[in-house]
Length: 287
Length: 194
Image 1 (cartoon, rainbow over the protein chains, first blue to last red):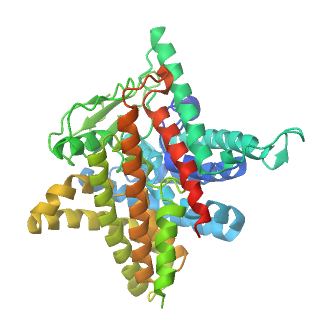
Image 2: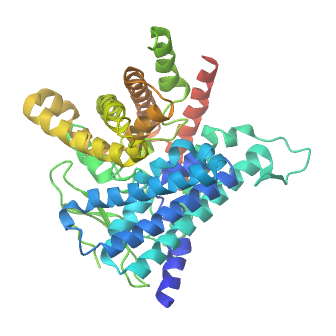
Image 3: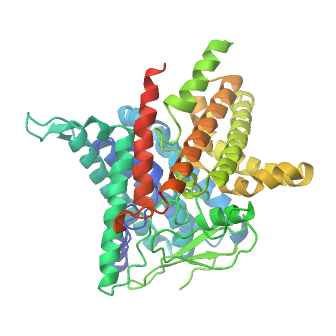
C-alpha cells in the first residue's frame, strides 16, 4: 500500500507529467479553454492511462519485446474507444466540447511513455496506481491551466463569476494564442526554478525543457534526437546548439530514424532521479 | 458530389483559417522541434504534405469500403492508427527502393511523422465532418500545407532571433512559444476570410 501511495505522490508532484516532464502538450494546449474542459480531459486521460497501464502490466510477460510498441498502441486505442463510446453515451456535452481530442488520447505521449517506462517492467498493482497518479497529476495541471485561462479570458472559474464587474476580460486567453502564452509563461517559470535550483546545487535533471526537447512529447513523433539526426542527415549544420540546459544524455544510434525512442527509466525505487537516455532500439531502462 | 467551390473553401479554411498547429494544436512537436532552420523546416513540411495527403486518402478508402459495410465504424481509432503507422513504414521502404531521389529529400523525416497526431487528427476529422474521399484528401492536403506555412514562418523567425539577448528563463522553449502565440494572433486575422 505504501508503494501505491508513493506512486500517486510521484505522479501528482514529483514527476507531474505536464508541469515537470512537459509531456502531452497538444491536449494541454488545445482543451484548456476552461477549467471544466481541462478537468474532463484530465479525468478521461486518467481512466485510459490507469486501465492501459494495468492491462499492459498484466500482459507484460506475453508481449514480445520486438512488437511491444504496436501492442501498446492497440491496447491504448481499445481503451480510448471504450471511453469515447461511454462519453458519447453518458456525457455528450463533454464529448462535444473535447471533440477530436478524445480519440487523439491514443497518441498522447504520457500514456505510451508510462507503458514503456513503468507498466512494461512492473507488477500490475503499482502500475495501476502509477497510472492513477500520473493521471491525477495531468488532471490537476490541466484544471489549473484551464482555470487561469478562464479567469483571465472570461473572468470566471468553472462557470462562476469571480472577477468584479469592472473587470474587462482579456478575450485572447480563451482563444488559441492564449494557450501559447500561458504555456510560454509556464515553461519560463520552470526554467527559472531549474536555474535557481542548480545555483543552489540541487539536482534538477528530472525537469525537462518542453516539447521538442525530449522524446515522447508526441507519441513516437517528437523525438528531438531523431529530429537533430534528420537535420544533420539533410545537410544542415550539425552545430545546432541544444537550447537550454537540457541534461538528457544522448547515446548510440548512428543511423537516422533508427533510434526507436527515448527510454524513460523512472525506476521502481522512490529516491531515484530518472535519467533520459536515447537507446538504439532496445529497451534498456537505466537503473 | 462536392463542387469545386466547396473544395476551394475547404482548402482555404483548413490551411489558413483553422490552421492545424496555430489554432488546433496538432503536430506541435515537429512544429517546435524541427523549426530551427528554414530548410529543414521546409523538408519536414514537404514530408508532412506527402504523408497526410496519402494517409487521408487511404483512411478514407478504408472507412468507406471496409468499416462502413461491416458496421465497424467504432473501430476507426484503432484501425486508423495502425493503418497510418504501417503506411508510413511502407512508404519509406517503397521510396528507398523505387525513387531514391525523393527518398533523399523526404526519407529522414518520414519516421518522425509515424504517429504524428496531425495525421491521425486529419483522418478522424474527415470522418467526423462526413467528408467524402476526394473532399477528405483535399482537406488533408490543405491541412498539411497550413502546417508547412506555419513551420517555415516559425523557422524564419527563429533564425532571426537566435542571437538576441533574451532573459535567461525565457531562452529555449518559452520564447519559441511566445513567437508561436504571436503568429497565432496573426493567423486569427484570417478568420474574416470566409
